[in-house]
Image (tube, rainbow, N blue to C red; front, side, top):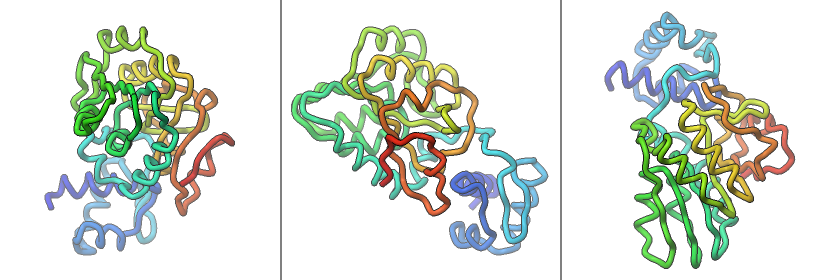
Length: 250
């Protein structure tokens, strides 16, 4: 594994709980103790983490570089699968729904079933997954300017289309949830999701618990306006930081 790949992997692992042990990195990346310690020393010099006894911790929970859709696919797969299985129970025959961008939404798209569904998304990987299932559903992909990182469409064309649409339910994710603030990496992506959410009767936030307590650049929605949060019950208890009674913990 190249050094840059190790750095990316270490930072991704750190984002899950905020701290990590040298032994955990050795096991997950199959590298030596000396290699891990050198990598941690260099990442500390770059200001990305702080060395602590036996490991390291993040300096803050604000990611400096957003992970790509492909990079996110390998993170917390089991937790995300449980989350989308719970979310799929909320979809009923005849629903008109919006699916936002993200790897969790892509997993949900794989298991959605129902008669007479109408599904709208602005995310190319989500659309591709939806299109694999040949039934009586109607699928709509919103065009616009594509963000390569998340492979979703944003901007004026996307937003104008969404403004004239109404949904029974919207399912969406985020990069960070801190107190009542739901955040993502760019204003444009957040603005598009905000329009869809405002035009939906019910709004379901699907996030793995590692995102709770984190921060990102753009705040685009408030937790108080969400119908329910679907998340996993992690050992560190991040899910307990959600100051909202209406949540599903799986």
